[in-house]
Amino acid sequence: MNKIKIRALKYRGIFKPRVEQRDGVLERQIGRITIECIVGDIAAQKDCRAVVNAANAQLLPGGGVAGAIHIAAGPGLAVECRKWAPIKPGEAVMTSGHNLPNQYVIHCLGPIYGKDKPSDLLLANCYRNALKIMQENKIDSIAFPAISTGVFGYPKAEAARVAFKTIIDMVGQLDPDKRIRFVLHTKSDLEIHQKVLSELTA
Ligand code: APR
View 1 (cartoon, helix red, strand yellow):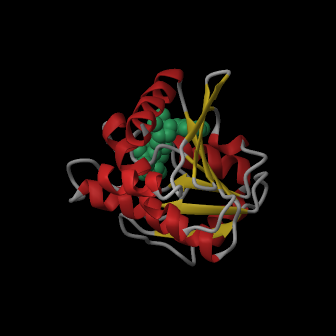
View 2 (cartoon, rainbow, N blue to C red):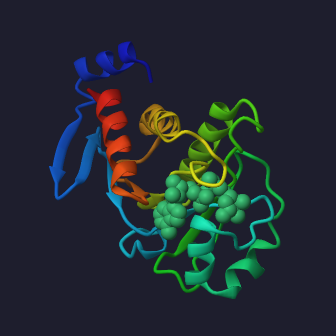
């Protein structure tokens, strides 16, 4: 959503960003959708119905997010994943959460920065497809990692901009009262995401 669109929605009272900053957590309300940014472990988000995996094409256990999720979920997750693999950059598929505290895992394959092109569109597709799955399955809360910003090398601020823009663009297509959380690995990643989200919704 560009600035003119946001201004028009603000004028019509649809887009009223409400900002709350507490204990290093940024919470932003866009219409009736809440976006949160926190520092934490993606595999320990007890209060989210779904958690997103920054997967590999084969949906196998890996390092980073894919390692944390598969370890916490147990071996049943990799077995269930077999029926969906391989997936392409930008795609998202859903499995159950197994031993995770979440009912569902939505697996997204992010682009390898500079190799899978256009990287920004493929990354946006990850977020769009994950939110479509969220909407279709009436999932009220979801936790995302910063897809592609680890092993896949996507610059963090650029990736955050793509992620938040995509979500803001989709707000009108989502049922109200959904909670979308970004779980960042470090305080500096949190600060990058807070800055980008604040800029996009200022
Ligand atoms: N919780 C939250 N964030 C995490 C965690 C965790 N437990 N572990 C790592 N991160 C952060 C990283 O610091 C990075 O910012 O998540 C972001 C994504 O990192 P990766 O997991 O490396 O994901 P990605 O860049 O999409 O690369 C995917 O990595 O592990 C392999 O098999 C996986 O091939 C796939 C590739």
